Amino acid sequence: MLGIFLNSPMSFDIALINGYAFLDSFRRETDLPDLSAFQQSLGVSFNQPELLTQALTHSSYANENPSIAPVSNERLEFLGDAVLGLVVGERLYRDYPELSEGQMTKLRAHLVKQETLAVVAKGIGLGAHLYLGKGEEGSGGSEKPANLARGLEAVIAAVYLDQGAAVAEAFVWKLLQSELQSALIVGVVTDFKSRLQEFLQGQTQSPPSYHLVETAGPDHDRTFVVEVRSEGETLAQGIGKNKKSAEAEAARLALEKLTGQQFDIDR
Image (cartoon, rainbow, N blue to C red):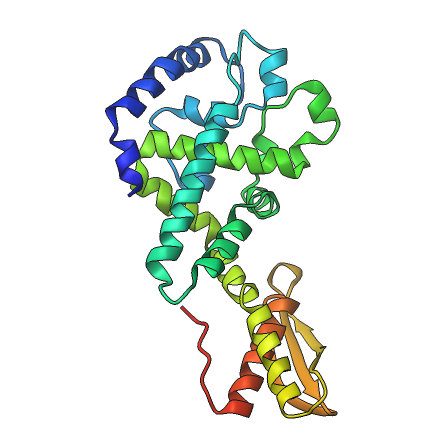
């Protein structure tokens, strides 16, 4: 589906008309650092690395250095936002047929929101490669969630324009896979926990309570163990990469134990 837009002659001609003057000026005039190492960390070898440079150029830098960077990443950010939304929406629709429209909307909103994108951008070290004006850099611009999220969207657009739809989709999912898995669990937290609470209330039992009983592993790879209890009895124990997912797992297992039904959330 994404390929429809990439293969459009109109969209390609617009990219040529609006982009090549800027890209040529970068080739001739730029004194910005080489981004080869960053390309390697992204897993993308750009045919036109100037697109990546533009994607990392904040408007403050473009304003202060018009002869070097006459164009900021704002247009690429616009395109990247559209590409990201389409890729995420299509993947959720195609791979998770059991999800309702409301669930897909909730998951997509989580994956494309600024906070999520900023976390992902930090994970690939994007902030260190942003070209910022002096004032923006001095105010901690390389760590601002808005700059990180917008920069990531612009990089996604650069990959799309340079490498095509298939590579762009694979690139997005390499970045968002862990967030998706977490969101799939967190996205059903309310369902499992509310279902468990409703079931216990129907049995005239006290509402469930959740208790963190153990954490293990290094800071970057923590595992959490949570127990769900009611009437002083431990109903189940859940394990997850964060407290919310561990609570969701505990609620799911408790429901299975109490109802005799299986609730499979793994994909």
